[in-house]
Length: 344
Ligand code: 26A
Image 1 (cartoon, rainbow, N blue to C red):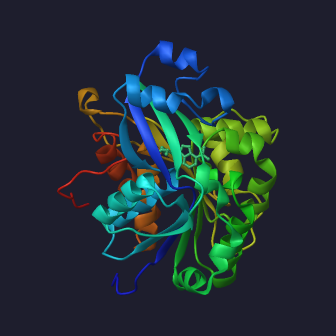
Image 2 (image 1 turned 180 degrees about the horizontal axis):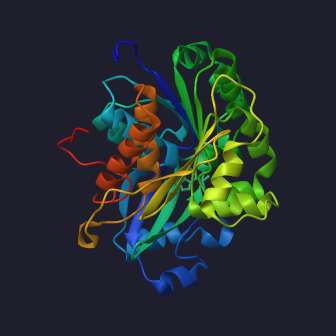
């Protein structure tokens, strides 16, 4: 497919700087964290950022789940293919994010808040688990006004596909709905990530309001289970939950909904609306010793997948592209991609 048009994929969520370190059980216990989780920081968590920097040799790495996905998609696609929206501050952390996105050629249009610091995410790696504690900061102040600014809205209208990270349900659901409606009206794909178990658990109402617009819904096994539980589906099997997601009511009937559930090293499950068979795609193998950390693996999968969809590849190929990029990302420190660039 000719990739002549610019900024075909538009992504929205929360730009964050990751403060990432290898930790231990004692550190998790100190802050009452689960080994594998993503939460919003409460008062008691706030000292963890300094703790990580001072005592655990933490690294500062560009993060924010959908920003990682956007970087990943741009990593694969032709130059100037992806634009990302979210709220950031006007500070050192924002400068690090801008440098990181420049490296892959991702365009970002932040709603810059001059008074509030850029959001940060403490990431504690223990083995193949990662525990994330987020203080959203300026990311929490993204608003409809920014999305509707004429120059930004022109990017929305120009885009051919939308990717929204579910973490944004904690910030500005009306902006998500605007993109969702735009997608349905113009028959463009709307791709949503469930992002974390706490989204279906505690942000059920805005999540459900967006559900009829999902053309693709991406999650992992933990998020699928949380969805099933919070929606009283009574389903525990990943395949059954994927099927239920695929068959939720849908507004744009010109596209069948696809639900994609990743499960770490286990096969990726894909259910298509109205189809009986749920498919499974094995992940790309990687020797254990080559894994650096799995932070951002799901985001990378979504990045490769979105690149495939935007470039008009088959569903199977798009899943394969997601698995290819996830395999590359887990060999890097944090949610990053290798340079010199590898080509799919
Ligand atoms: C609202 N929350 C909790 C979040 C996040 C988040 N990105 C957006 N909003 N909590 C963690 N992350 C990001 O997830 C990536 C790994 O998948 C981290 O910044 C990390 O880069």
